[in-house]
Image (cartoon, rainbow, N blue to C red; front, side, top):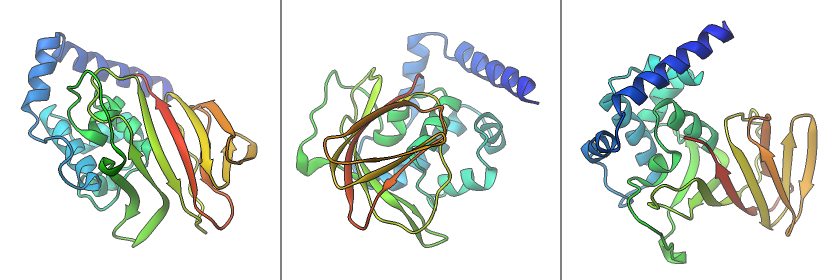
Length: 228
């Protein structure tokens, strides 16, 4: 039941915390991960990093499924690079693996500050290669490699799509500012249309869906906050 599941999850986090009790232990673990910062397609890196962290921590896919509520079949597709997970799913995986979300997006976080030039941004597209399906948005990280960061800023492009996705729920908060086009936000039972210059700030625990409104692409600045 829900209470038992909550206790099991807390026990899991306690076990991981005990295993990495000191900063030196966590640093040694991070150093043991072979993946280097962005040199190749980030679509591939998300799944690869999830698998490597999971295996380094001695966890099975079933363990992660129990902690996140994500189906084993979907986790396998993510690790096999057949599916690029949405940001909400990355947040859930990061919490279950006791890592910061940014690691799965951009790799090691070892810099006191980070500057991202316009020509250097890496685009991550949402896709499902098995279904040949594109999910209508792509995002670019605006703060890769900054250590100890508490926010994840993204430049997101929303594309017009006919398919309907399920609403997302995860820990944290989100701030969105519309730069171009028109955006539809479904938050709980409410639906709002935002235009350029409009913004919204909400708790991510509320079921939500952000999508393009109309037949033209929408560009937004999104800042996500998720406690580790």
